[in-house]
Length: 144
Image (cartoon, rainbow, N blue to C red; front, side, top):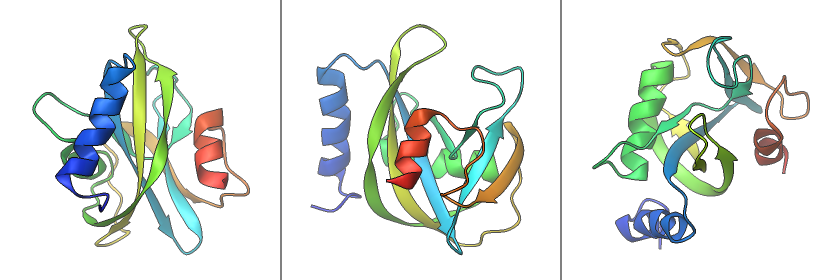
């Protein structure tokens, strides 16, 4: 079963729901030239100043993959070309006190430029071995 099959994606959501996860986030790990694209949260946002991979909330009526495509485009201006793999998930406490599960996918994009930020204050192509200030979960995701 491929990571883009409706059955695989529905299984991810069902498994998360079964353990009481209340929020879903889809995240794109975009690599280019041995580096990974990171965006920095605005200082006044929840977890402000942290660097992260482009990601965002799965809205009602949307699949995880729909959100992956939409959020990547909204946050970076980039258009996904292919979803090439599912690289796992991690859970974290959200700003409302619930638990969110971030589903992480390795993707390719049609073009790596220009990057147009709408929700973050900076971006960079970072070497996995010398990441800026990221959460422990993002560090593990990008270095393991």
